[in-house]
Length: 462
Image (cartoon, rainbow, N blue to C red; front, top):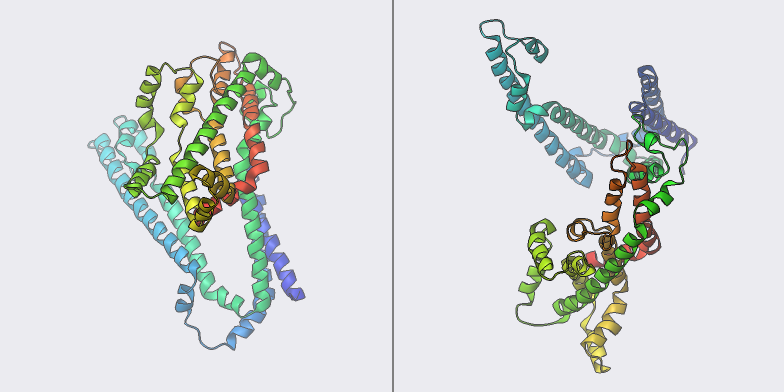
């Protein structure tokens, strides 16, 4: 159990860290320097005041311990290897920054001497700009990548090296004190949980902010949305944006087209993926591994490389601007074949033999044995295929020409053309269309996310 002074120390440390975080957040929020300095001083004072309360028992117990080889103890921790990795990165950044600084100074000296002629050579860029012969554009063109960003390289490398130094100091001096006090280990466990929770919340907010901005912007006016000072909450909710989207473009038609093509892609990828995965996992034929390597190689080829021959093929089939033109290039997914094969390989062959004894053929074995046993992965594959088909933009943009076959992703992009020639663009209505487009995907993920997690974990275990 934690003593009273340990609980007080934990409270002081948490308050001090919160004060330091507020001081950091005050920079983008425009707080005055005096307020930020006061928060930093307060946070540091609270942390320093908590140290005697937290470490007194640990230091007393540590003195009675036998002598410890600290370097050996530090190297046994996985955290030490992580710090060494970041130390190497920091030193590399510092080396690149120094190279960039030397290159910058050499390039500047050359241009400054050329501009000065017989006169005094300027020492700074501001002085060089006053010379009529100094061409700043030519000077910047002669700078390389490291010369242009040497300030950032040095700053980031220095910060990273300081973090590594703090981590090593913690492992050398503070970690033994914590190990010598059971209650102090509990306190540090509290810090770890609070830190993990705070980091998780921060990352979640960063990831969700674009979605929040899209939803909020769909209720704003065009003037407010394009204002130089962004607002996190609409001054006035404009509910008409959503009905306007349905009036300005055949949005319902886009949804129907997307639903039809997405379901066709999902069903064909699932069916062909199951059959191919069964052959690669439970079948035995010549060239099996070589063919599977070709399937894996297909994962490395981006669509931008293959879309020209595919487009020519679709054009020769007279399938441009049709459902077939959208669906045909996406009938098979190499990634899904790989996932299903890994799961089918995890199923013991005795189940296959039992199915054959019961009189099942290959299709019966797949449907009645393998598919039920790999249900989470099949659901995961179906969901991912549906999401990919729903969000697909590049290929539908290439192959669709009219409103009759456009999908939702292309249709949202076409919304901007409905305000051609107007003074203010309709970005608010584009945001409303984007919100309506993602609603099915969000609902699908919310209801079926447990199957996605289970299917992914099972595929990774093999």
